[in-house]
Every structure is written in structure tokens, then in C-alpha cells.
Image (tube, rainbow, N blue to C red; front, top):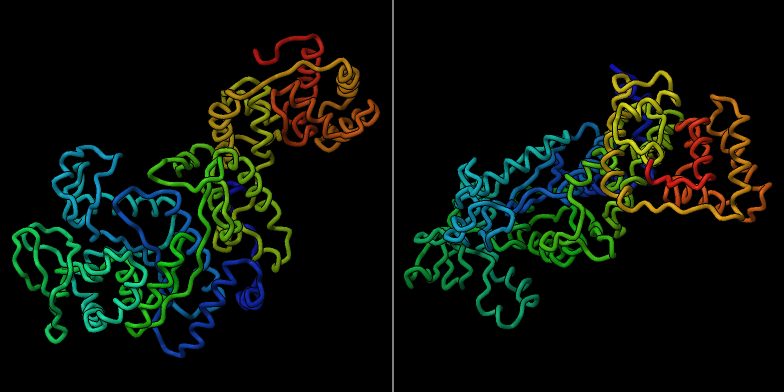
Length: 543
């Protein structure tokens, strides 16, 4: 096993972790403590604590799906530390009995789907031709997606739960409490919809469609409803159980919470009102709503809310072209109740923050360790960091070397870290690949070199002299001190302007990592030669 795959030290005992977790400020522990209080108030011997996340399988898994499962997993782990004797389960629930409301844009054979609108997704043919239904196809994609990140969960299908009878007892309660549920829902609806709204949606025996029709009669004693089927205009009586009916989604959410006795489920800020309504319905059904919190939504580059239909955000596949899943987990961990921009320019910062948290973990006291994001990202066992170079520094190396060849870049890396190879530093090797992709797609098209000014020329000349006198293997800190000294002696009142000049003239960018570290990585002689070319007026953009 290579050094960057082994695990770092963790607090010695579970008792120590439990004690620290009682007052830890990390938000997963704050959420876990809410669950501990819930158990104390309940005072029952419930077999396990059930965590749930929901998924609408009319589309493919997306970055929000990852975020919700990752965050819920962090809370689950914190709870397991506080209550190690209480079993837990994460249920990833697919609402695959929902009717297909419209044909998605990103699927083949759209015309085939047109004839199956409003049918449950598990009855709609699979346009991809790989599964028994469109719902089954997307469910398989969801599970493959979650499995690829190593999440521990149990998958659940709404269709399976409805048709198998697992919801029957609670569905009969819904029928019994029909008027109470209407009292909760009707004030939230537009006037024109109030007359036809029903929390119970029959499924037409004629067309198989999920019907949004008024319920004409209710018979709680035998568990049936009567409605007029639009397919034939006839009054039809169906049992509410056994998959013959389903519920409108807010009532469905509450019914699921009540039937399964869900203890924890988080939701986006846009669902705050829906959560409140579902909480009320859950109480009407005789159960306690789950704990949870409402996380903020992601924003695009312009600060507007990300919309799947608009496609104005960043997909998970795009993130993973430029950075690791762990860096995405860090993005999800940090400030979940704060709206954050989710765009390409946040990736380098998140990668380097992840690496910084990881490298600092082994030397921290246990109290600091359980407040470190990597403890939560890796469920208490973060790998030892052995990545000696930051992501931003690699981006500058690609820029200065004018090479997108990993072998060339590793030649520079081995000047900086002689013992490093792609084989014994696989995480660093991954980082090289990510940096090449990011540079090619975002940095290279936007690079803009400028010539140094006459006022700056003496400083560049002085830096060349310093580098020529420097030791070939001077450390990044030693070289940083030399760069600082040149800036001070050459009259830069604000040293930021000096470093900005270095980046703009030599790298075609206005900012970058510590310049001393860049020199150590790129090479003292190579950097001196680069500056000399700039002094000679060469076009550095041409390599």
C-alpha cells in the first residue's frame, strides 16, 4: 500500500470521541445531537434510526443528489459515534410511481414516451432499451452512481412499497384522516384547484395513468375510493391499498415518514413550506416528523439559482473532470446553510483546501480532528496526505512549461520532490491529470500576457541576479524570501503589486500560488531563463 493510501491516526478510544462529540461545533454533530434528543424524548426501543433521502427518477442523478446523500452520510456517522449501540440505516427512496409529466430532453426515442405520459415511471418503457421501464433504468443509474462513491445505503422503490402492501396500513389512515389532510392542504392551493384537489390519486384501470381527479366517494370501512375515470366517463371504485392508488407528493412524503418512521431527512431551502405541510400531515397520521434541516441552494456564475432545466450549473461529471470526489464532498460539507456559487472557478480553491485540511489532520488534537472536514468526509479515517504540491501550483507549472504532457510535468515534479513517482504518489498523479484538464479548458483560453513596464524592469533584473546566486535546490520558503526582498528593495510600496506583475508578465495571469514555491517546482535556472526571455521582449505565450 502506498503512503497516500494508508490511514492517519485517529483518537484512541470511542469514549473520547463520544465525549468530544457532545460539544463539537461541526454541523454533522449538531444534527446528530438532535437525533439523540429525539431518542431520549421518544423513550422507545425502536430497532434502528432511519435516515432517508428522496430521489425523483424522471431524470438522471445530479450533483444535488450527491450532496444530499453525502451530507446525510456525514450526520449518520456523527450519530454512530454518539450512539454506537443504536443501529442505523440510510434509505435512498425513489419516487418511481410518479406519473411521467413530460418527455425529458436528454433521452432517445422521445416519440415512444409521448404515448405514456402520466403513467407511473415504472410502467413507462425504457427509451434506452436496457431495462424493463424508464423508472428501472434511472433507478439503476442512481444505484450505480451511489455505489461508485462507496455510499452505504439501502435502495427503496416507491412502486415496490405501494404494490407489496408495505404502505397499506398508513394509506388506510390517510383515507380515515382525509378531511384533516384537506384542511392542511386546501389553504395553500389556488382557488380554482381547491374544488378538485385530492391527496389520493387513483390509477386508471383503463389507461394505467395516475389521475388528478376529484374523489367522489370515500369508504373508510372497506378502504376504497370512488372517482370518475376520464378514459370512459364511468364511476370507478378502487381500493386505496395494493398500488391501485398513490398520493400527491406532499401527502406521499408525509405518509412515507409515518409508515417507515423516518428519523432524519434534510431538504433544500426551496422545500421549506413543503416540509412544514408534510410535518403537519405526519402528525395527523399519528407519527412524529423526522429531524433534519433545510440546506441552501447552489448558485451559478452570475449568482442565480441553478436549474436543471436551464442547465446553468455545474454537473458532477464536469467537476470530476477537474477534481476528485473528495474535493466535491468538501464543497458539500462547508456551510450547507449558505448559498454558494457552484461554478468552475470554485474548483481549484476547494481542491487546495481539501489538501490543506488533509495534510494538517495528523498533527491535530482530537478536538480539532473531529472539527476537520476530512474527518467527516472520510468517516473518521482520512488518508494520510502525501501530495507535496498544491493544485494551483500545478496549474502554474502547466502554464509556465507550455506542456500538457504528464511525463514532462513529472520531470519538473521530481526536481521538487525527487522520490515522487506516479506509482508511489497516485493521488498526485490524479492531480496532475485534473490540472491538465482544467488548464486546457479554462486557463489556457483566457491567458493574457503583458510586457513589463520600465518601472518594473529593474525588479525583474534584480530577481534574475538573486536566482543566479541561489542554491540549485533552495527551498520554496528560501526563494519566497528572496522574491520578497527584491520587491522591498525595488520600491514596491504594496508587495501585492510586485507579485501581480510576476504573474501577469511570466504566466499570463493576475494571481497564483506562492511564487517561491513555483520557482522551486519549475526550477531556479528555468525560472531565471523565463524572466530573461521576458526581459528580452520575447512573446512568452508561444512557449
